[in-house]
Amino acid sequence: MLFRSFITSSGAQMRVFDLGRRIAKIGRRDFEAIENLAKPYPTPYLRHAWVGVLSWNPDKPGQHNIWFLKLPLDEQNILLPGPRDEFLQHWLRVVQAPDKEHGDAPCSYKPDGNRMAYFHALALKTLKQPETQFYATARAYLSGDTGWDNWQQLGLQGLAEVVARLDENNNSALLANAIGHIPTVPRNVLLGFLESAEPDSRLTLALADTLAKVMAEVPTAVDLAAFCRALSNSVSLDQRRQILQLVLQHPVASEPEVLSAVGSRCWRDLEGATLHLYLEQLAKAGQETFIALVGDLMTLPGKRQHILDAFRQPERSEELSTAIGVLMAAARGGLQ
Image 1: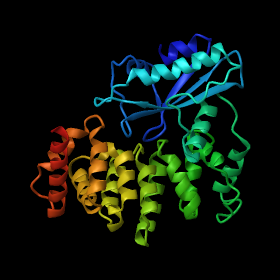
Image 2: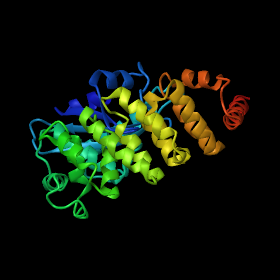
Image 3: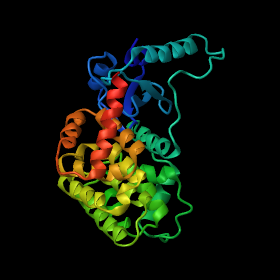
């Protein structure tokens, strides 16, 4: 049994989203290939596929259902069908006997508050439903009308909806004008939501200018990680790569929070000199962090060979050479 056949058998429609590294739509054909074990999951995270399944019946407007799932993958990132089947069988029993107590569905999980807010914002947009009342409040704040320091009344949902609708109501320009004025706490929340959007060139430039001001002072690891996440999916490819190199040269870049954000969100840009710079900073963070984040990167399509090539480069610090040696020894030990 597949998700689509289970859901569409009742006349419902569905949309699937990846929730592992950022929240992004998975195309129908791609997800069918993943379910049929014909294609590896493209963005695994911690050896799992983290997905959100939104379903709705066109004949019942205003009603929809959401599943959040953490589905195990094998070493080639192919879906393990057993847990998926157990989940669908659980819901089949629920449909057949709705008055009985069935307990929690296997493989279910609850995303954190920020991800829940952004997913809900995407669900409203997908279903062509109106924004919540928090959307107007967020837009009023971002326009500067209510004062930049009066952010305590803002809700996660309103900010999430603005970012999810960057292509509507001139929201991208609104955010570009506002980002340099917003205090740290709401700014970093917005930056987190932007990892799941596609900042255009104007917004990317505004983010870069604001980051430059932050880096000129005393940035924290939380600050740098937030900007890395926000810029990771920018349409301005060259600019976001240049910014990533600048961030990785900052002393705070060796903090685990920054390294984790770069490895999990900016993986597509970790090549050549940028990858080498990342590995050098990673070696400073300690062996446990080095092994964990390099291991995670190696699960991503196309990254394993890039990393192995970087390991063979003779121009590296003694610290990085030691970290690579310990990692290789651990890998050999695991194979014995």
